[in-house]
Length: 258
Image 1 (spheres, one colour):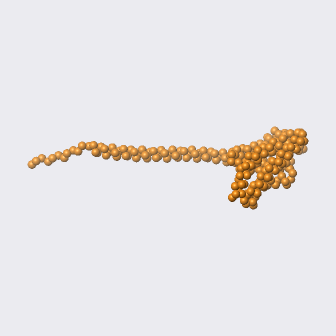
Image 2 (image 1 turned 90 degrees about the vertical axis):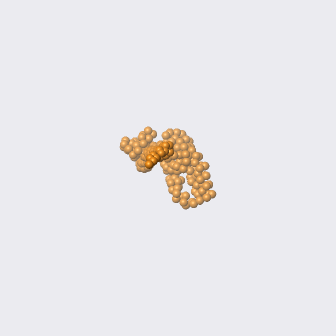
């Protein structure tokens, strides 16, 4: 019980710092893709920032695992966290580091009590579009047959891919770019499904509240109607009793003397 309390306290304490570090990762990743001609030290600094942020999330996972009362249960209940921590170690590829950091940030964002479902879904859509655009630009920019050469092209491709419109005017030509497209399609379908379900649930809840209000009004009117009827009956009964009590007694006629 004490270990579980320590784990919850650790997660709450590291919530804001880790989400802030995710912004550092985003800036470092954007700078490397958008400014390919920047000085070498800029790219090295951004690369170091990416690894530092990933390392912070990895340390967070290890500490939560150490504080968990049931270690194996923690590992089984957090498979994506473990995959995100181990993924960059399999192959030194920046894209894997991007995917793992997004998974870890998404996990932390879901745990934040101040982030609602609408905020989480909206942030996920915006984040996937941004990072998907940057990732495909990095992969396709120098491809011989590629047609995604600018950031504007990449953003347009990312938008049409996530919404599953797929005009076909822009498409990745490399294997890695197509793998990115598949991931973006699946993520877009899932997130749009969540958005649709959330909107439908909002309408249903509004209709249920309106129906409940109408039912309460109907019940109130019925109760008032019954009460008015009872009052009328009581008034009629009392009026009849008072009228009977106030009526003068008529003496009986006396019989004539014989």
